[in-house]
Amino acid sequence: MEAVMEINCSSYSDNMIEVLKIFKQIEWDIYNPQGEVEYLPVGDDDMYNWQCEKISESKLYDIVSEKMALKERIGVNLFYDNGIEGISLLAETPKQIVLGISVNRRIRKGRYTDMAWYLENIIYKLLDIGVRLLSYELMEYED
Image (tube, rainbow, N blue to C red; front, side):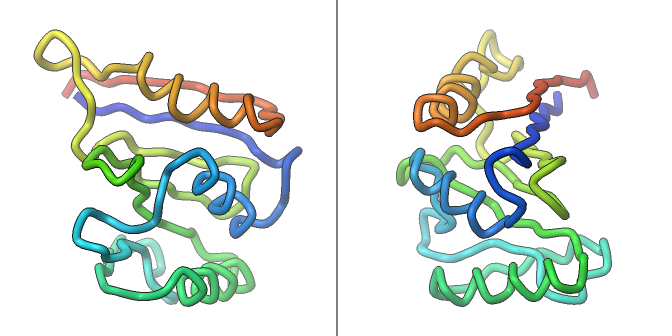
């Protein structure tokens, strides 16, 4: 199974750094359980050559800034509340953010994504802090 969530945050901000900061506000952090950041580097050119290293939050924001200036796809794995559940955030702009639900995905009935958990811990939390979403969609695909 593969699960994906798409959201449009463009009414909140046109800056992906601001979007990353609101995810942090709703308990999705840039650091994995080992204290490293997993991200797509500058010049990745859609090769999806994920990097994993110990860098500061401000260093990641510098990378995201440079990628925005170059109109490159931004990729950052986010982890929920110091846990193991994660999402892969991919976006060029806040208008179309794709969240790949693949990092230690929460499941129900042995194989189905626990979409209610992702709704509660992403969409509802964003709405609770006043982030206006122009759209959101959840999808799950059979392999």
